[in-house]
Image 1 (tube, helix red, strand yellow):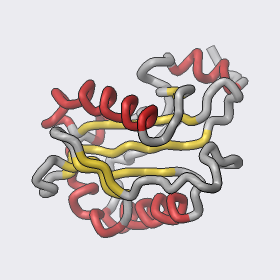
Image 2 (cartoon, one colour; image 1 turned 180 degrees about the vertical axis):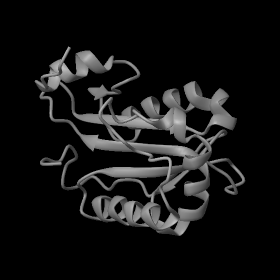
Image 3 (cartoon, rainbow, N blue to C red; image 1 turned 120 degrees about the horizontal axis):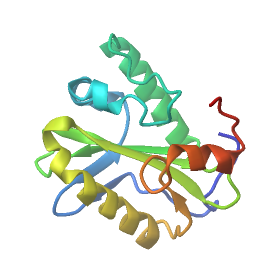
Length: 166
């Protein structure tokens, strides 16, 4: 992640609440709940970051997850990228995650990946709509890419100039 997409004066929210969700900065404090959510949906989540992504591995350990969450927290603190755990309103079940990264395409301000665990998949579109509105209203972002959702992976790869083998 080479560039920033927020101003020096913008303070990224550390949490967000609406009638469906509670977002909190993705960090190792939520490791066990996050790990359970990831592994409960491991097969469907493969490829969420692109066809070449191996995350999450079927044999991923809690220790590996903790290390990954520490990286996300460090990226947040250094303002490079912003990842959030998505919880239910009671804050006792991790429903998924939202990742907000700078874009390598000049056509977009940021790239967003999000997911909802299998047993709560009915909330997937609600999470997508919530994140779109939140990024527009609170972050002031308008050019947002959601690869694999509103841009098919082959088009995103072209956008980034990635050469794929046919």
